[in-house]
Length: 419
Ligand SMILES: [Zn+2]
Image 1 (tube, rainbow, N blue to C red):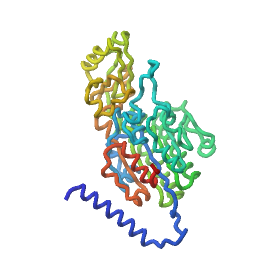
Image 2 (tube, rainbow, N blue to C red):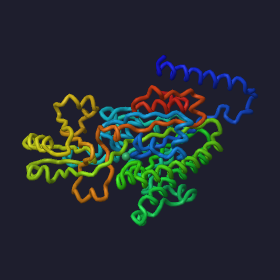
Image 3 (spheres, helix red, strand yellow):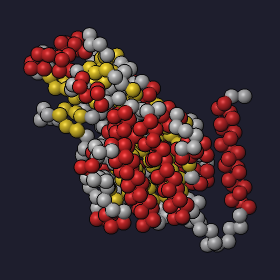
Image 4 (cartoon, protein in one colour):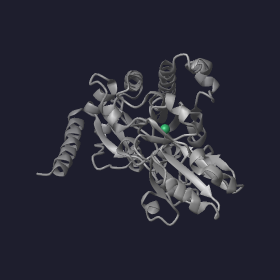
């Protein structure tokens, strides 16, 4: 008997159980609070939370309890395993070469490097846009302003600490004061993530049944970069704190959406312990003066050389200690990694385990975590679904292997998005 068979049988039994329970409840017209109600679904993106980090939390942590009670497994994010590309894959359900979000920066037609901060760069609709078109109330609440500016456009409510609508100030209050961030770095990010989740709770109450809310929780990423991934005590504490705030959100969902809610938890990318620097300015030396633009993204370096510097750039990277792989335009790996979009850099270098690309080795003193590579610790992220709507829809995530498939799960939980 295969595991697959057991999974399928379990799913069928679950559907039968739900159907028989539904039949056992007298369906007096209008008596059920959930009759005809539209579901409320919350997508929680734990920025920078590797799947193994979640597994290493103490068993009493809410995220571990929710994983045990709901559906839970590890899935693979896209390459590069970084914030913009990771979020775009989850929210569009498309690979980077299909949705246009290829990394941290791209070379503009004017010859300057640009970040991914404008919704005009998205080449596929987001699940937020589709939910809004399907008539659901939508919110995108982000701990990071860059993520809000890229994905928040179609949401009824779009919030980040740098963009706080007056309704949020009235209902929840302001985010933590940025000027106090370095007094207690972990505590500050715990406060920020709690604020994001509080705004979500206020929106759930205001919107009533039938809403889709996306959250970016920045703490696990920021604290993970500074102190390293779990089991670093600071990052462990951060995820425990996020879990407690999500426990509170569950209470709000039960109150407002009764039996018609689900929470999906995942991450844009993971996090790997690092201790060694690759410093491109030292590596490239005088090559940069002859025509070379490059962009650093932790475990990845993107380079745009000129025809005259290309060979020297490739050989400098290939000879560098700490570089695992250099992908050029002619490399067949490109298509496999979905890195063939015109915005993808012509040269992509990937760091070895324990190394990261950084402007100065002095940064390593206060940088213990990094991501961006193809290491399991960077690409394997959690996928968790809990709440009664997950059981009712007989949602199956056991066959899901990649984060690009999460948009389909969300559409199913939301009762179909009509496309
Ligand atoms: Zn991130």
